[in-house]
Image (cartoon, rainbow, N blue to C red; front, side):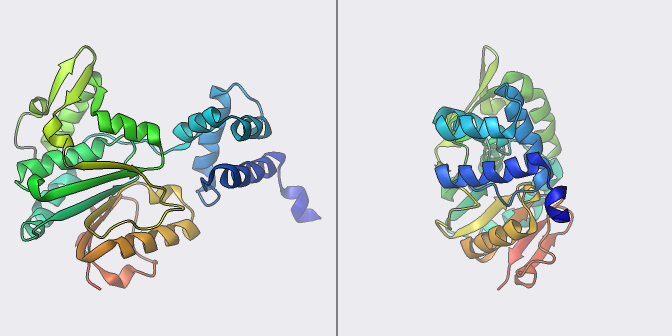
Length: 277
């Protein structure tokens, strides 16, 4: 009885809410890291002007449009073009030379949000002469983000920061050459979009859909608990070709996973690994 008494009403509501979403829509947030997920759920409650998780549950379960709004709020969308510029420097220096011998390249951006980092990679590949042999697969569970990425239209006021990132990342041209400005938006070149496939994919519930030479899954695993991280690591391992490259976020690691011995590190600081077995 003592253990039951320690469980707060909100904890009970959250558990029922997440179970309901999974059973109603198939989206599984039950193994997300609790603190971050709770912050996003509370934001969704504020946006919907609701005071309890149970009220949010009632709305989301009965209104698919509310579910889409919830999905948009709870999705991981913290990103930017050439985010972590030192990562892109390391990718140019350590990974690009390995990719030059490949006749074709399938590159998967898992959890791509609105695609800012996908466009960053498309620019990098174009500058390194690899774009024509490359196909980029940009996936996320949030279809609103995918639609934004597919359009390739971003806020113009973000370009100053993106330009600084691009320059720090070893960019070889003027960043403004890749987009045209219209009103308060930047529209990126069609040449960057032509090799990108945008598709809905849920890392939590969906399986592998191809074999890739490069997988980027940066700053996604930190939102999952250990059990879910283990499942996603398995998915990434099974989706990567032998000698393929795996890039994780700066706070993520392969240590203490069943696949730690299956990779060698190409860059410890930038968390770039090569699959060796």
